[in-house]
Length: 295
Image 1: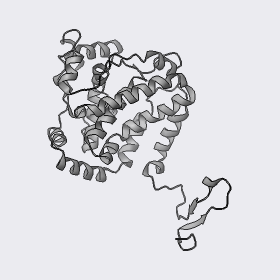
Image 2 (image 1 turned 90 degrees about the vertical axis):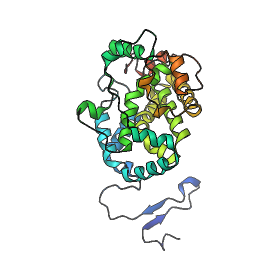
Image 3 (image 1 turned 135 degrees about the horizontal axis):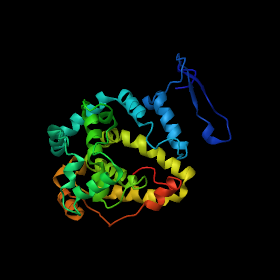
Image 4 (image 1 turned 180 degrees about the vertical axis):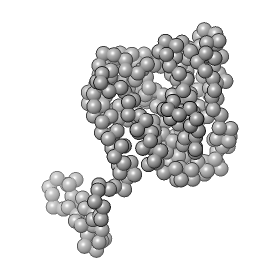
């Protein structure tokens, strides 16, 4: 259809020797504010997050995840929960393991002090030592930290809750250490695992929060801290390979393997592709401008 035949199209660029400047279709709109076919681009909070987190440096004045509560508020309001629930229902009908996981809807209740009792060298004791050193809590979900009575309202909420509750176990099981660049191994494992065991559309919907948090760091690294890029990419790709090879790790009850050392825990979980310990501390210090900006 030509531009003249479509009342919504104002003009189509043509005639430029720079070939990729041709074919720009300028669409009429009655809107008095910027509007896009992308619900994410339409939200000012998400635009601000993506622009700021992609382009800024890691200064002392602005903590790494300072804007996260605002982002989570935006995600809750922007994401298409109805469509995601349709995808969840379709997956549950064809994926018994996924259906069982959501039916059980297990939520962890252990405290940091519960971890103290595990023997040295176990996943649970290593988790306690890490939390004790940095005065951290097992709970990472910003909404629960702000409101202890918050409960998941849908499968997307439950996914984000469980990923927060199991997140630090991935660090220990992968023997990847902690720190900003080590986080890319976790992103790789969970992303690879979701796309291995779920339909692509559902996997993408479940990974929305992780994508909005972690992908801007990649741009920031390349723009400002390229010395950290090789380790970042290694961790992301290595983690993705582990996720693709392994059983449905995201549905595993990691609380049942806390008494085991990492090697035995990996075997019990069906974690495959482990290569041995990885040290990302030097790259994390580059990313943090000489300091570690996330424990």
